[in-house]
Length: 330
Ligand SMILES: Nc1ncnc2c1ncn2[C@@H]1O[C@H](COP(=O)(O)OP(=O)(O)O)[C@@H](O)[C@H]1O
Ligand SMILES: [Mg+2]
Image (cartoon, rainbow, N blue to C red; front, side, top):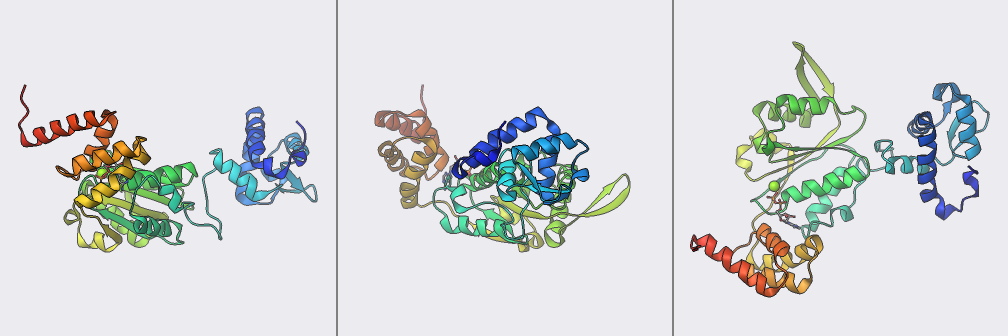
C-alpha cells in the first residue's frame, strides 16, 4: 500500500476509513496500536507493541509518525481518532474542549415541534456536569420518541448510552446495578429510562443516590461496595405522582400536555410526512379527518401506514369512530 501522504486532503477522511479497515483486517494488533495512540496521544514504542515490524509498516503507510524513533503519535490525532470512533473501534470520550455528549439539535429532527425542549436537552447533554431530565405527559405525546432519538444519535457517535424500558420488566434491582457497574467510570454515560415510575423501589433508591452524588452503593458477595459513575439520566413517565418528591427534585422536568385539535391539525401532517413518508396532501387529510374524533398521534400513524387514498382514509376513520362508540356490526 502506498503512503497516505499522497492522498488529497478532502479525500482523506473517506480514504482513511478503508485504509484503517484494511490494516486492521490484516493485523488485529494494528488496531490496538491505533486505539492506544488515539486515547493516550504520544507513546513509547515498547508500550505500544512488541512487534516493531508492525510499527515500521504503520509508519511507512503514514498513519503514525515519530520524531526520535522512540515516541510515536498519530499523523493527525483528531482525524484518525474521529475515524476510529466512526468505525466503532473506540468509544467517544470527550476532550476538555469537546461537549460531554456529541449531540446537536439536528440529531432530534425526527421529533416534530418542541424546539425549546430539544435545545435544553442538547444543552444538558453537552454540559460538563450531569443535568438530569424528566419528560412527563400523557401517552402518545412523543416521550419515547425523544428517548429513542437520543439513543440513536449517541449510538451513531459511539458515545456511551444505555436504554432501559422499565415497563418490559427487564430491570430488576440487579439489572440497573449491573448496568451501572458495567460502565467505564471515566466515560460519561447517558442512562435513558422509559416509564421510570415502573422501576422497583430498590432501583429508584439506587438512582436517587447516583443522581445526587454520582455514587452507586451495591451489595456484592455480602459486601457493600461503593463506586462512582458519570451518568446523565433522561427519563420519561406518564404519571409523576408515582415518583417521590426527592426523586422529582433531582430532575429538570418538562411537562407535556395532550394536543389541542388545532395543534393536532398542525403537527400531524409534518409527523406523517417526515416519519412515515407519505405526501403532504394525504397527511393533511388524515389529520383533518381524525381531529374531529381524536388527538391521538398513534391513530394517525396507523392510518398513514394503511391508507393509500383519501377514500381509504375515510373508510378507516369511519371504522375508528364506530369502534370507539362500540358500534361495530357484522
Ligand atoms: N412530536 C412528535 N414528532 C414526531 N412523532 C411523534 C411526535 N409525538 C408523537 N409522535 C409519534 O407518535 C407515536 C407515539 O409517540 P411515543 O413517543 O411512543 O409517545 P409516548 O412515549 O409519549 O407515549 C410514535 O409513533 C411517535 O413517533
Ligand atoms: Mg412511551
